[in-house]
Length: 276
Length: 272
Image (cartoon, rainbow over all chains, first blue to last red; front, top):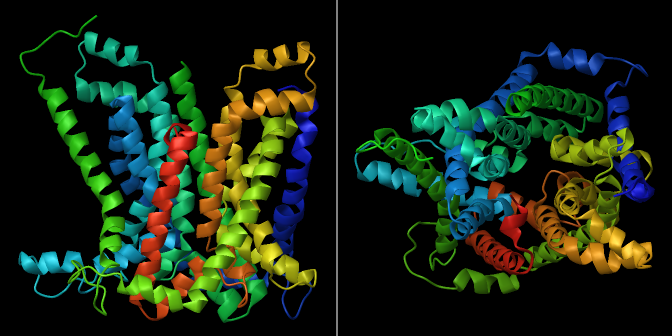
């Protein structure tokens, strides 16, 4: 497109400045106020001097990491098989992968309550085959939250990897075979490094979705497992302490953006590998 | 060139087995829960048990009297409709300006417009609430739609920019040289060619808005309660089998819409 079309960006840009950038600035400003003083870092000091608060931050960032890794382990094979499937099967597989993304998160999380509950299928199975005598506590536990997050967010991992894999030149893998490398070695030394940009893109999307997955975290984690989104919500609506909630929001955003920036940097380095 | 043939390539077999097994587990994992929930929603009994004791439409019929649920569903549809309309119009215009534009400003806009996908949506929802509060307004449907546009427009932008970058510029030049004006060229050349990408983006934006909780949590009030929030509260407080019936309906509608989107816009091709 020629640059004479660039004014078309303006309406959306105006909307974003008025209703995205401006609210974030107001949020930042509010986080720097308190009842006593006009400008103060008191809210931030309060957050970082309270073990309870920064352990929530740490738990949240770590939860995202664990869920993202599990997504990668299961998501890469789906993308790999999908990239090699015939056009017809590829459509079927992608359809199955995006079906959960488009089904409401509340509905999907609800489905897991039916499965993970004390009388849920998993417990009936475990009791039935004598794996355990007591029903397992799967709901309201971190492994439960991770499991559900993986199901809810995995498509975000699969699609970017698939995009890169379908664009890979199949001659590269053939060349690797001709030169005597087996399938595993080819995967490890050729396909995987070349698909890293997709892997990183998938990790970024999955990670930022997992840490902010309010519905899944609250419904599966319950009231005792508190992550950052619930922390913000409780401070804002429950305790009605807006300046402190604003400070927590800012800290959370900066932390998530830092992780995303780190991943994006790794992504840029991996692209230079592919281009060499 | 064919690879040197061994009698049996154990490496290839083991790789296929491992990846096949992982992918099979993952697919089962992706689809299973939704199916189980769908079956459970047809239970005739008071409790959510799988497998259900039988099949009945009892809880679906009960939805006919669920006024609050119906009102929430209607609100959600209205919000999702307007969000999609505005996202498509603003998103398409912005995509035309951004696609193939290498200037720094265009890149910056691209990053700005995509950032709602990466930033914690709940923090943005809270920021928007503070913002309209400072301006002296209370949460209402128009603000809810504004908030939804911010988090849903990236879907339209992504698919539309992808469609535009596959468009052969020679076609546009041909149209111009044949005397077609800019509007005419857009309507008769560009739009028909990017329509599948645009439709897929619109569909994704609609579903994202219909499903949004983090923004609605702050921008919807008692009167404008939307369906996902209503369901979320229902599940948190008392597990009612009617919730399963609504969920079942949502799953069925999603499936129908997806099949339509696949037929009309080649949804799965747009997602690659």
